[in-house]
Image (cartoon, rainbow, N blue to C red; front, side, top):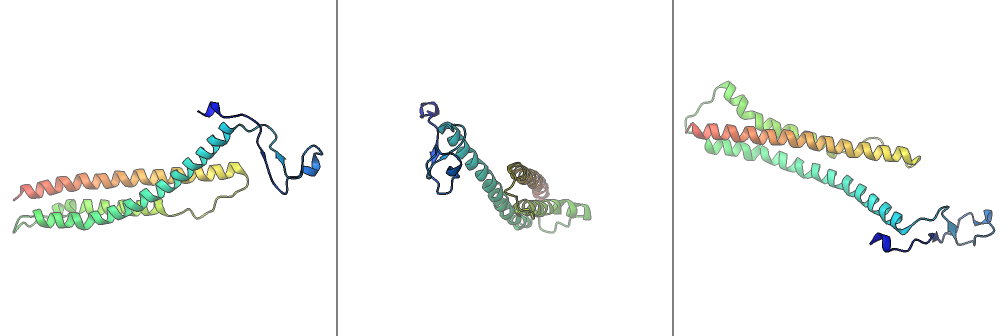
Length: 171
C-alpha cells in the first residue's frame, strides 16, 4: 500500500521560507533539500503516534494500578475477616504473614504513584538528540516502575491467596 503512493518531492507553502536565498524558488514555496517520499512522512507520523501512545499508556496504567492496589487492601482485610474461624487467635508470626499482602499492595501503590508522577526536569526541544534521549528515559522509567509494581502486586495477591486458604482451612 505504501509503495503505491506517489514519490514526488514535497513542497510546502510557508510565508517565511528564506526563498530570497535562491532565485529559483517562489516566495510561498520551500524545498526540503532532498525529496521526502510520502512513505517516509507516513512512517514519521506513525512513529510520533506510537511514542505519544506509549507515554499515555504507561501513565494510565500506573494510574489504574494505583487505584487497584489501594482498593485491594480493604478487600483483602474483609476477606480475612470473613474466612477467619470464630475464636481463632493467630500468633505474632501469623499476624505478620497475614499482613504481608496488605503491605505488598501498599508498596505497589507507592511504586505506581512514583511511576505516574511526571519527571522534575522538562525535556529540551533543542537539540533533537537530547529530546529523543529524554523521551527514551521517560518511557524506560515508566516501564521499570510498572514492571516492579506489577510484580509486587502479584506477589501480594499470591501470598494473600495462600494466607486466605490456610486460614480458611483452620475452620
